[in-house]
Image (tube, rainbow, N blue to C red; front, side):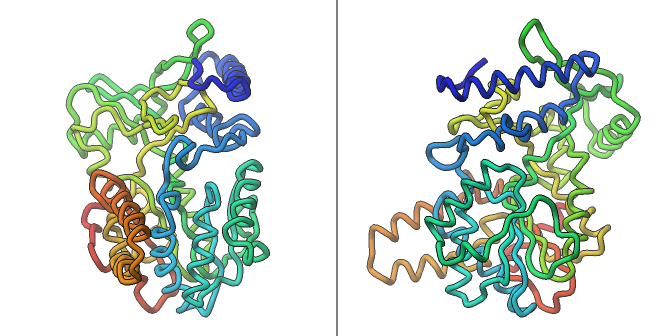
Length: 387
C-alpha cells in the first residue's frame, strides 16, 4: 500500500485509510469517488494538501509552472498589471497558493512594474500550507509580508482586482462514471478485505441524465469511463460573485468539452502523482500522492457567463506567455551578457512553452467585469471556438 518508506508519512497514510474505511462502512459499503477524493486531498491533518508533507518542487511530487523559476510570475505580472492599471490599484486574490513561490515572485515583479496591489490575499484552507507560504514569503519577498493576508473563505463583499487560480481547479473532487449502451454506473470506493478498491453502483438520476447527454452529444461507442466535476459551476459562480470589477483568471491543464469527452478518450483524465511519477491508481497510499483530473474549460466558461462575466480569452499557456512578453524577457536576458543565467531561463521557458511540456496541455482563460480595455495575455492566439 505505501509509496513511501518514511515512517511518519506511512503513519499519516494509515490514519487516513482508517478514516476512509469508517466512512465506507457508514455509507453501506460504497463511498462516492468525489467524497473519497475530498478526504484524500483535504482531510484536516491527514489529506495530501493538509498533512504538512511538502508536495512541490524537485523534492516533491510534481513541479508547477511557478516552481520552474520566475519567468512565469513575471509574465503573469504583466497580465495583472494591465488590470490593476485600469482600476487604479485593487486587490489580488490567489486561490490555493501552493508553496507561496508564485505569490512572492508576483509581488516582486509587480513592484518592478510599479503596480503593487493594495492587498495580496491568499485563500488557503490548509494550516500546513499557510505556514509554508509564510516562510516562502519571508525568504523571497520579505518587504511584502505585511501586505499579504490569508482567508478562510471568499470575501463577504465583492472586491475589485484580480482573482486567479493556477492549477487549482484540477484538484476539485470529481464524480466518476462508466457508460455503455446498457446504462450508466457510478464509480466509487469499497473495501476488499483491508484494502480500498474500486466498485460501482447504478447512477442516480442526476448523474445518469448528465452522462447520457454527453454520450449522445459525442457519440460514444462501447465502454466509456470518465469523470465530471459537479462542484465546478457553483465554484466559478461564487468566484464571479466575489468580483465587483476586474479579472477572473484560471490556468490549468484541461480541454474544451468536445475534446474532454472525445470518443477516443474512453478512460477519462484522472491522474495521480507521487515523486514525479504519474499513475492511474488513486488508492495508492492515500494522503501521500496527488489526485487530479483535467479541467472542463467549457464548464468554467458557461458558469462565468451565467454570472454575467465577459470572456476575455481562452488560449494555451505558451500563447498566453507570449502575449505577456516572455520573448521580450528572454531577449533582455540575452542582452545582459550573462550566459549562465540566459541558459537557465531558456530551460525554464522550454518547460513552460514546449508542446511536450506545459505549453499546450495547460490553458489560460480569463473573464472580466467592468473593464473598458483588453487584458494582456489573450492577443497571441484565440481558442474560444474550442469551448
